[in-house]
Amino acid sequence: MNQKTKKEASLLVQGYEVVIGFETHAQLATQSKIFSRAPTAFGAEPNTQACAVDLALPGTLPVMNREAVAHAIRLGLALGSHIAEQSVFARKNYFYPDLPKGYQISQFEIPVVQGGEVSFFLGDQKKTVRLVRAHLEEDAGKSLHEDFIGQSGIDLNRAGTPLLEIVTEPDIRSSAEAVAYAKELHKIVTWIGVCDGNMQEGSFRCDANVSVRKPGAPLGTRREIKNLNSFKFMQQAIDFEVRWQIEQIEDGFEIQQATVLFDPDTGETRAMRTKEDAADYRYFPDPDLPPLVIARSWVDEVKAAMPELPRQMAERLVADYGLPEYDATTLTQSPAMAAYFETAAKASGQAKMASNWIMGEISRRLNNEGKEISQAPVSAPQLAALLRRIDDGSLSNNAAKQVMDVLWTESGEYRIPGWPDGFASIREWAQVLNAVTESLRIVDAVIEAKGLKQMNDSGALEAIIDEVLAANAPMVEQFKAGKDKAFNALVGMVMKASKGKANPQQVNDVLRSKLQG
Ligand code: ADP
Ligand code: MG
Image (spheres, rainbow, N blue to C red):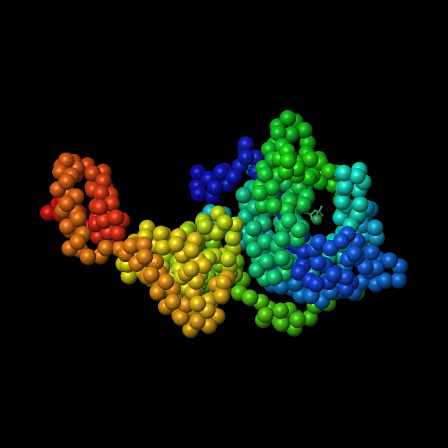
């Protein structure tokens, strides 16, 4: 098998290819609704935040929210899409209790954002998912099922909340790719600030269209898993759905197109309704809204104000710091993490070490404590100071971890004067340099207090090695008889005798020359 078919074959599930297309609803971070001035804040008393326009009461007219359009432009620019000079709002007609006006204003034939793509890494494999479109639309209200009183209620606060629905081609080939896609899109929308990304509050909701087929066959019939609002459930739901569909087909049944819900309690997907076709919605252009016209000059203005995007930043980290692409991608999880890295890398001159420490030791501690990098008790200048002490031989890697531990757990005591908490980024370089000088003093104090200074005095080391060799003659014999393990054991004993302070590389060199000499 060549490389490509091998990779494709590895994605098959019981001989079937999985095909997934995503529809994601990103709630746009605006103060007010998409067509009215009612507020969008989350968590208000039910039915206090929908105004007459949101309910389309007679005599009201919708007025486009300019900031919602600006967000659509931002997203289109970030995804390399075409931004339509003119797009059209349409009414999507359906009956549901949480939509008392009987139609949702959406975009159908001509959406504002067209084409584009999302690329990400899955392990070391780069994957690109093509986008069909992203269109502006309003959210509906919400049904509340108050089981304890046996009644259902409707909360219309969410009615008219601005959404962008981002639709992919059916390019995704596994649940792992689906999660990686959704995480990448989530990163982009939060990075550029068009969406707060809060999945619990429903600000970022994914629908996964899933089908299976034999390799090379036409697309199978899909079922759409609605409202996946956690990455964990997303993976579970898709895995279950794929197994279920394969089982149905193997048992001789045909898949019926349907909308399904995932139940986290049972881990199963369950059909909610058979799927409507576009024709069922009787789409027509909304007579209350003129076409949305976006001047090129506005697009240019938005473009000029865009931040560096995660992918561009990752490419820059590779070019400027010689980082592997994997490191660069991991470090550009958030603007705060990227800034932390850049500060530590520049201030220490040790980019790869900074990357290793942030992806390893620091991320592990943050994960354990459920913290963001902006809440790290050890700041970027402190990491830089630590790396400099490793680099100049004062600290072994192991001892450096112990210093990190002290700085992390006793951070209150080892705070850098004048360096605000959570301030990870390079603003004033002079301030960073001051903080590093201060941090070196702090790190040296910890090294001193805990007796962690690495022994670089070769005379003292030789004395220790001579003692160890004299006390372990049988081990030396074994080494001479060709047992490599004996060498490692001797290194271990020397390290122990030095109370961990010897430089392991130096121990290796001196020991080998003594044994061979
Ligand atoms: P609808 O209008 O019913 O929502 P679309 O054609 O807009 O259908 O497709 C919705 C989503 O479903 C898109 O993300 C698309 O890529 C995906 N999709 C379409 N056909 C399939 C299929 N056979 N298997 C998996 N996903 C599919
Ligand atoms: Mg659709």
